[in-house]
Length: 200
Image (cartoon, rainbow, N blue to C red; front, side, top):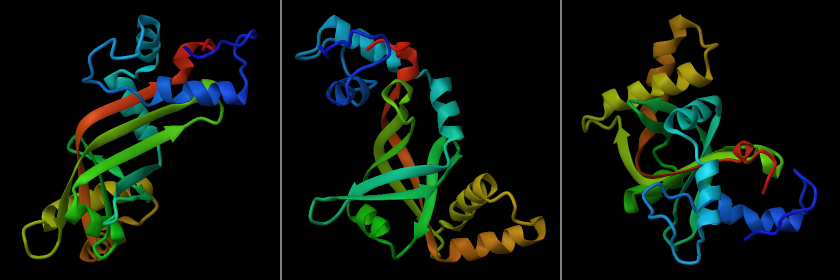
């Protein structure tokens, strides 16, 4: 169990760092309770910080950017940050077709995305989604409609200032050089430390 501080809502940096991964990242929605080395108090703590589905999607809609992780050829992790949108219940984004992200995802479709905020321990919130990347490109193979649908959603969400008369031409330019990635989720991991009420 993480050590508790003697003052409510306060703990050392070292203590918060040590407690963080156990309470934050091990939040597999499909995992059985009471796994190896996990007592009922640890499981209860994880239950307390888990977001509901409504809370999760509200949090996601509040965020501007998506952190995206995929695998390089050498097994290392390639990280990047992109604008995104929710399209047909899935998170989606676009990136240049020749980018390293697309090269990686064509070779290995495993993907993890992260959205997070909060500057101090008791305010940390986040959503991590692990799954598979589904790629769509405007390359004559039937992906043009999906690419433009995602392009419109991403632009409406992040660039509402684009004049309406320029919107579709901008979508066409965006789609011509980009591949769309739709995240097909397998695991949702969420945390909201506000729910701890300052007690660790």
